[in-house]
Length: 122
Ligand SMILES: NC(=O)c1ccc[n+]([C@@H]2O[C@H](COP(=O)([O-])OP(=O)(O)OC[C@H]3O[C@@H](n4cnc5c(N)ncnc54)[C@H](OP(=O)(O)O)[C@@H]3O)[C@@H](O)[C@H]2O)c1
Image (cartoon, rainbow, N blue to C red; front, top):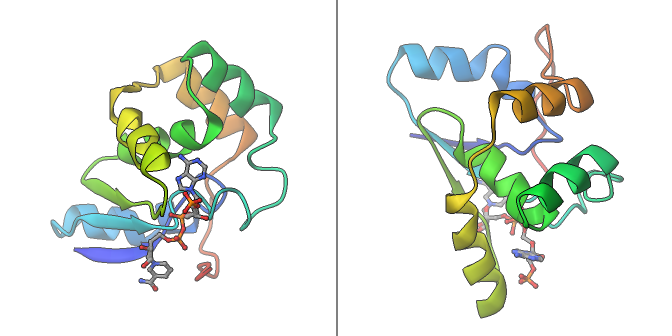
């Protein structure tokens, strides 16, 4: 298991690290999977594509961000919350299944890197 920062707005690990981990049977534990409720990247939670797709799933954008991470192979996430309502909402993200078309739209709006990049820490 390798615990690293991973959320939709920070996909640097997808180019080299995650494929290496997959090849070596190392699971991913994504920290800050909600981008600290969007604080780590301006505009993430407000993004129109995310808001539209989340609404189609009757989900919040934060649930959607969590669903995105959880749908990756061999990946778990550790969202933090001090509010029971948020914890329940986050558990609800497990029920959201993004379609291939939705994932393609998300890739277009938030592309994974096509070369090695410095990895974000926070
Ligand atoms: N290994 C490392 O170097 C490292 C570094 C950073 C963090 N971590 C770990 O990763 C975990 C998560 O990191 P994090 O707390 O920085 O980021 P995060 O889980 O992405 O975001 C947490 C923030 O999101 C809010 N939140 C959670 N669920 C929500 C919801 N459903 N609706 C609205 N707001 C929601 C929380 O506020 P509320 O409390 O109000 O819900 C909190 O402000 C932590 O447990 C931390 O220990 C590890």
